[in-house]
Length: 93
Image 1 (cartoon, rainbow, N blue to C red):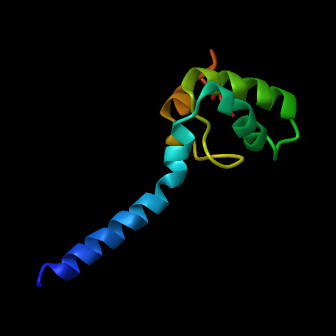
Image 2: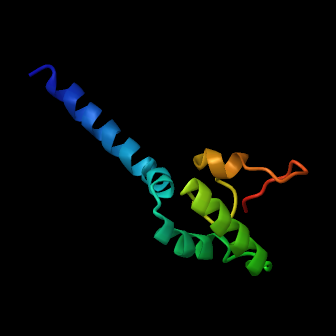
């Protein structure tokens, strides 16, 4: 009986971690057909939608990942985050 509280706490912590990282898991398991809706949302807050969509789709098709949200969070997708232009700037929006 003494081990029961620890089991409950472990189960609770596991569930909290699962909920916390569910967005990250969702961002990293894309199929090519998932790229357009993810990029449409990713580019929804910018005034430069055409170039954003072009590069987002290009990055998604290569990396099969689009970070969650309309900006930032690139650390969730290392390939997306680390792909740079010739000048060394970020290639993916």
